[in-house]
Image (cartoon, rainbow, N blue to C red; front, side, top):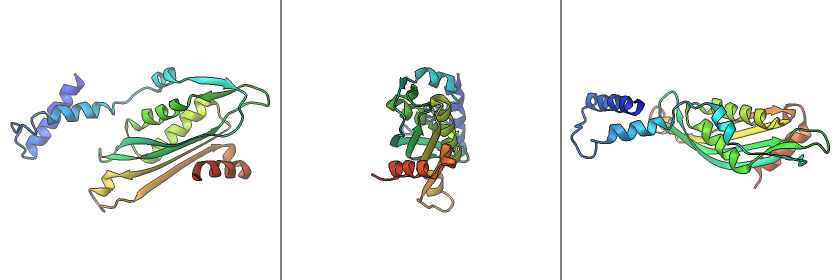
Length: 189
């Protein structure tokens, strides 16, 4: 079983570091760490797609889901980073045609799905944008993430600054008026 194998390895690491595994405070640590690590097991997006709810509507304006909280794990140091994500998209379709909208809670589910893996923020931002674009067939997608990285706070430079990443796809790259409208919705309260 994966959890058991991970727990054995964590136990070995603690022993190498000189911890007494008979100490009641540490005794169950390997199992707790193993269970936590399993939350970051690689998951297939086909399962995520099955959980999504889509609506066919005539709505043709920008949709923004702001400040979705997320936690992820830096693939370089296996330390957490956390912050917020804003996802915006413009449904695709001609006038009077039904457009594919995604259920609002499902946008948060998408962010959670991609955040629950070992990754870096730049890739995480791209993964979310790519998935939203594909599943909604959007004309334009903008994903912005802001996060604090524990790997930077507790090691190396010991800096607690915020990192912002942004991915812009589709019509937003060419259409300055559309881009400005997205900016207003995404960045203003």
